[in-house]
Amino acid sequence: MNWIQTRNTLLVVFGLNMVIGCSNTSNENDSVLIPEVNEPVNTINKGRATLDSLNALIIDNPNNLDVLESRAALYLGARNLAYAKADIDAVLAVDSNRLRALEILGDLNFATNITRESRDAWQKCMRLDPSYVPCRLKMAQLYHVVTEFEKSAELVDGVLNLDSQNPEAHFLKGLLMRDALGDTTRALQWFQKAIDIAPDYAEAIDMCGVLYSAQNNPLALAYFNRLIALDSLNKLSFYNRGMYYLKQKQWNGALEDFTSCTKLDPADIESFFNLGYIHLQLDLRREAIGYFNQALSIQPINHRALYGRGYAYELLGDITNAEKDYREALSYNPDHEGSRQGIMRIQRANSQTLAN
Image 1 (cartoon, rainbow, N blue to C red):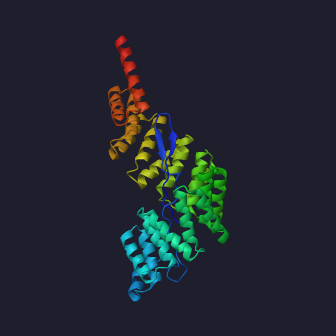
Image 2 (image 1 turned 90 degrees about the vertical axis):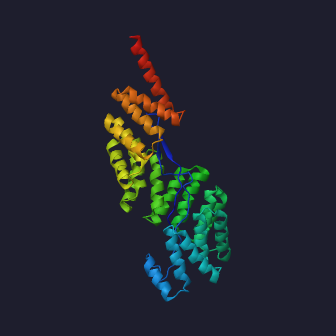
Image 3 (image 1 turned 180 degrees about the vertical axis):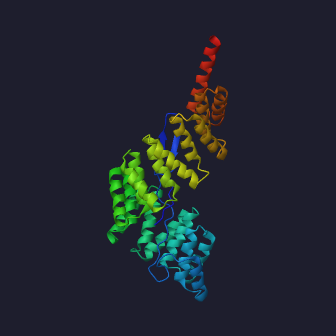
């Protein structure tokens, strides 16, 4: 099951009075958005059927509801929501009680933020078949998103009673331990159980990495490394590992990972910013300015990048440009303490120069 995770930024405060965000995690309502719909075990969906093969099957048999559901799931995964809805509407027009169609309908509504209709579709599915695990899990996820943790836990426990080896249920149990009880130790145990059952369960691996990283535990690296081995094009895994290295002041590792991020996403402002910060730590001030410039070329109104560049100018003795950047940063964020302190340092230095 794939999760489109909404994660609050994991914040780390550094010596520049800046806050550098880790786009990963976790509350941390990373709960869940749309999981991938469950694929039935039949000859059509052993493996991932391509759109072309599904279209060919529909041409041969336009009334095959299994194929229409499978194509809807494929469209949903590709975020082609209008086509997905057309297929599911066609299925439900023939049979309004098809469980998988109701599941996908709920997913579609969730993808467009119509959560009430998602709930209605999944609850109908549960009424028709209380043992149908996918919709029970999705209702549990929905309750988790809206912080109705007791209802979520009841559904998750019900799934585990039906299927004690369900990795998604173990993952959700971990989220509930963390978010409802604040118990990261037990949360990690549940996430690890999910991984034991499904070794390539990326979301559980990621969550372990994030939680261990928040604890400054080097075990985080094993999980981030595993994620990168599973998907070397996943920028977030490089970013999170880079943040771990950065917090530990392991500059070389951080430089490599944030550089990988910018190659995977040339518009990654945070990684350019972090590269600027690291070069400041290495006393490579002109190089730092170059990275802050890249961040500002992507997002000109960025008080943190302006402050970082201004600080680099100040260290180089270029007071005019330093003050200019500090003042521009304050024009965007009047409460930014670092820029205010920078201007005060410059004013004190100017006063001393005049006094002498």
